Image (cartoon, rainbow, N blue to C red; front, side):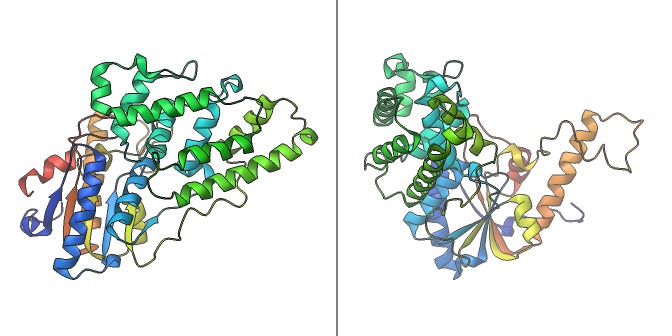
Length: 369
């Protein structure tokens, strides 16, 4: 930090901390904390920004649910280039692929865990990851019965969630592989919209289903003309077309439009580029290493490729460590320059994979928390 008193006002700048073992607990407590903070400081939602190193689909989904339940308006500062970037689209394609193993499109374990999180209300990413690790075989795209689940995992996940997983598995296994994609998707929505899976109406899920059904119907109607005769060929074309960004026309409108006067939710660099000052910031997942990480570009290191870099000098671990710390310092300065009153720190003990978090930013803030 380019200051002679790096901690001079840090104690006053940190308004408090919000935590929890799992991300879902952190998000629920954050919503309650924001309601209290807004009342105490007479904050308008537009005067708050939530900044995170990354916003995966499960985290966005948890934030949306918690803020909706707390009555907090919000909007996501992000760009979605195609429907494949929408987590619910990926989730529905995951179930479609698992129901048709003869298509030979096995989803990744991450996709299965994300689909479980988005399909079963209340199931957090950590427990979904446990279910996936124990019961999904990516090499064969098989979901195993819950009789294969170790007792210790079953107790950690909870019988209610385990039972809903088994219901999805049995439903997928019982589907007629000859049914068209649009019929399958309609049946899937009928199942996952039932109250035991989604206690509240899933408006965004309905929009995704409607868009996917329309896209599948158009493909089915033109399949013969473009040389797709077998159901597997149609299925491969449908899933690959969306995953590769080829199907982009008329993307789904996901639920109610965002409130431009609500709380801003953004990634770090998205917020810094927007340049919008606020009274209060929330640093989400403060213990995550993502605050310190360099974007994963193994073949295009921006620092090595810069004209100012001496090509005769190897890129070392010391260089990497120095750059990471320098970037983190600039991030902190950039964020604090756009915040007039204070920062609320929010983090969970475990990340989405169930791994304990203890990133450099979190350790650096130990002295002022």
